[in-house]
Amino acid sequence: MSLLAQDAEVADLGLRWQPGFAQLGPAFFTRLQPTPLPVPYWVGHSDAVARLLGLPAAWRTGAALEALTGNLPVAGTDPLATVYSGHQFGVWAGQLGDGRAILLGETAGRQEIQLKGAGRTPYSRMGDGRAVLRSSIREFLASEALHALGVPTTRALCVTGSDAPVYRETVETAAVTTRVAPSFIRFGHFEHFAAAGRVDELRALADFVIDRFYPDCREAAAFDGNAYASLLHAVSKRTADLIARWQAVGFCHGVMNTDNMSILGLTIDYGPFQFMDGFNPAHICNHSDSAGRYAYNQQPQVAYWNLFCLAQALLPLIGEEEHAVAAVGVYRVRFPAAFLDRMREKLGLPDAREDDGALLDALLRLMASERTDWPIFWRRWAEHRAGADAAPVRDLFVDRAAFDAWSLQFSERLAQAPQAAAPDAALRANPRFVLRNHLAQQAIERAQSKDFGGVADLLALLQSPCEEHPGMDAHAGFPPDWASTIEISCSS
Ligand code: AMP
Ligand code: MG
Image (cartoon, rainbow, N blue to C red; front, side):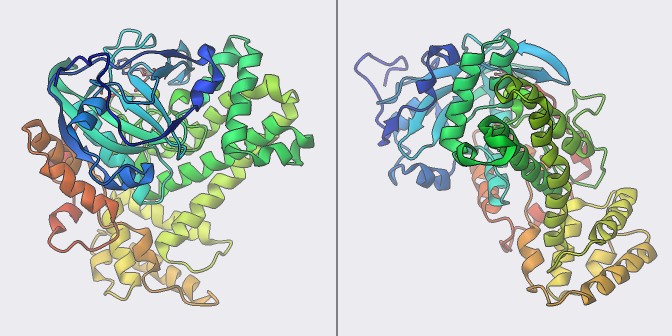
């Protein structure tokens, strides 16, 4: 098959398409085709996402491989790249946009399909429009992992690779991730039109988002019936719930710029992310973030700051500043409550009590002082709650007396619960398999020598992370010493 698509040559993915984002009109995007890559190959794929899209069972055809790498047009689509702006590291960055992601379109099942790394766009600035194999595998695995953990996220259908060189700190090779989400609209899309004083486009965008994703905002009586204030309120709630889930699973995003914040409250744009190993509240996963703006314990505050940027952008539509401030204000109540709920699930507490926050803080302080491994502590704790001996949990602590004292406090608290928790409740809230940096790294290194089995094996574990998966103990253990030397930067 020729790499450069002939006029008549198109791939039919077996999907029906409908007008989605493109309805907004040309002020919001630029039409363009992806730039081809030579001799593509499959790197990883998720049949769960294929089912979500309604793809046929045998969807991984040669034509699909070419199409999802950007080498063949997809029948029924008219691809585009969208424009947005944003605040990066707290500073207004002006126009950004889809610099390497190309939206194929929206399926009849209301999922957008986007090819990330599919070549330059008018918004690429100095970039090459490409993504490297390493970061593409990380995004693919992480989005499927977070989804399985119940954390809202964009999904990934597949990663395809090519030996075409991509120049980062070293020479790497190119890959394309096929991303899937109901919408890839970011806070930055709103900031873009607000900053330029283009209120008509700003309103069209807000109306589009409300009509499709937040229809209740039209009927809401709150904020004197102001639908735009209700939208901000709803987004603030979703964002609070999202960040609560990140904190509970120990997920560090790494680049919480406003252009990386989803209007649907999804995890989006996986770059230098990390799932926490030893618990360090001030952990910085992004090697380029020397000031720690996006450290683990800063994430809740940064999300709130980002919501203020969104509020500022929506202000011309909301009108009343008081409404805008009140709408984002819900975050300050919702986040701590949601976080505590998630942590009660992890602890295996069947009910809520006022002093649970203090009980949790005492545990987190102890864990922070000892850098206790986050996934292993929680999994062993869950096994203990399900009836196993306490020794494997206790053995994680150098200061056993401190742990015993906390454990006693926990037992006293549990005794006050009106009913017992299901013995396996905590097992369902505490995964045995987590996408730690070193596991991703091992799969990446194998993939770089064309062995894609590591990606598939890891995906299978991450898709049902709370199951036992006998024989896979090595993937559930402590990180090796070399894990702490892995440096993940913005370079992707
Ligand atoms: P990020 O913070 O990685 O999500 O990216 C910030 C901005 O840079 C977005 O507008 C991206 O589309 C753009 N970008 C990142 N990497 C590249 C690249 N290799 N080529 C073109 N644009 C890029
Ligand atoms: Mg981004």
